[in-house]
Image (cartoon, rainbow, N blue to C red; front, side, top):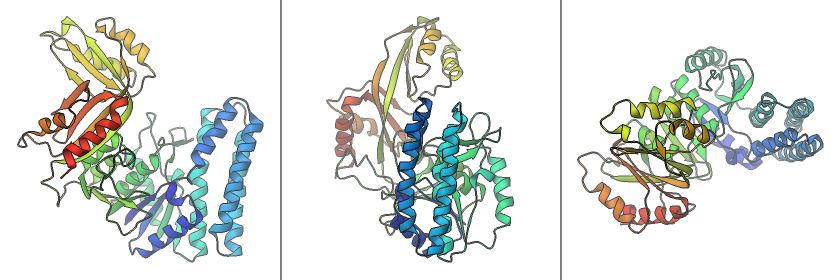
Length: 444
């Protein structure tokens, strides 16, 4: 069993859905196919929600009809027979009838917004499953809302997902292709909810782990994960192999091809993840697994950058020869559910970075009761350098700092793991730093 996930750009045009059908039928493995919404749909649905929050119902209706016109045109090119087209048009009518009913509900709450946004995945999967049926394929649509669950903290209930999926799949043993939605799920109240934006990757990994898949494939419009950001740096190249830990660091620190949560369920079950390119299916892509084989001697593998970082500088002489001080600091961040990305310490100071400033004022207020605080640095960027940085490899930090010569660095984190060096700098230096590191660490 394989799990293949296709993102919004991969299903964004009728001809691309045709190509996906050729891909999934051209491979002999039985597979679960996870689809995102058509590209642009989630943003359009969120825009409708924003209009409703502003009590602009007519504007919301106009936006919905504009989106429906796009789908009406889409299905006319997707299906090859009059029967297939009729089924596709009925899908559009049914789901946009639901969208219209959600627009009329008052007050328009977060519950309705989540139901509205879920329509993107409900549309794409029904349309694709109907297309496979039209073409005579052995396929079935498996609604994610029947098995994908999250708990009160928004975390997937892995055991529940596994049990429900196992039971449901027993009734479809005769089907070669099983289509389901990414992103959407149900919460403990049974309401429609989601795994946050980008969550279709997460869905694929959760399913792959639950069914103990032979492989999870994430199909995008890029040839695997690159060693640097190709939008900013010239002459980047795809990485052929990464460990789970290396890929997790890169995803968390800004590698856009992979959602940060994706790696965990696959790693837990030991299911390899392969990143593939729908525009170039023959390209090898990137394989993510427990261990790499061909590039064990490579020191520097890849670089990623995470923007919109805020740095906090905390001082107190109470730290000197004291225990429990750091716990008091991090208890405050835990209280406000604010993750810390980087941390550096000295005898009397702690510097941390966060990417969520929603509760910054409250955090500062509590910290100031027993610490002195400097003015935070906003608009910072963390650059994450991933590779094989074991203690036996000497000169690694020197190479990094030499490449960064002339670029001011605010913080450095090195030694926390054997595969990550993180640098904090002002966002205005990001492009310069990415290019300098690329030239210094990867140029032959």
